[in-house]
Image (tube, rainbow, N blue to C red):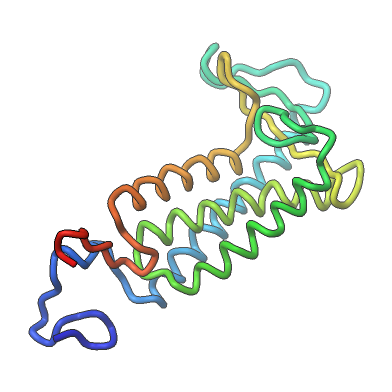
Amino acid sequence: MQTARGTSLSGADSPSTQEPSRITHRAALVVFGGVAVCFYAIDQVTKYLAVANLEGAPDRQLIGEILQLRLTRNPGAAFSAVTSFTEVLTVIAISAVVVVLWLSRRLGSRLWAVGFGLLLAGVAGNLTDRMLRQPGPLRGHVIDFLMLPHWPIFNVADICINGAAAIILIQAFRGVRLNGARVRDEAEA
């Protein structure tokens, strides 16, 4: 028999329905908020430092030829795609922030909370650039400064978004819902 919190009265949860990292909603919100705030701050500080130290400067080697620093201002999406639709990208980013915040009400898994925190930090980090940087609100260019060989220049927010995507895919393939419960196999149903 299960209680409202999803635990059985005997104290044991069914292994097929419970995620090992399942936590209370309050704890999930703390993880979600902590990850989001921490990585958003890292993104904004690194962009500030990039603008302050790389403006007009030649490329700087951070790790030899592997990782270099080059300041660029990106009006488009990833890989500088759709550069003439900056306003549309801004509206999409605003919508993404709202959706992530809305879905965070269901969090009950530590890994989902980390993934959503990274996603919020990344989307909000680039959205901040679009809202506050030149050439103006809704049209601002995103600050990118990390360069790998044969890869477009990116920033910490982009790393967060990609990390979040990986976590979300892992959780989806594992069949773990936002609240930490596992999706039951059709054979068991």
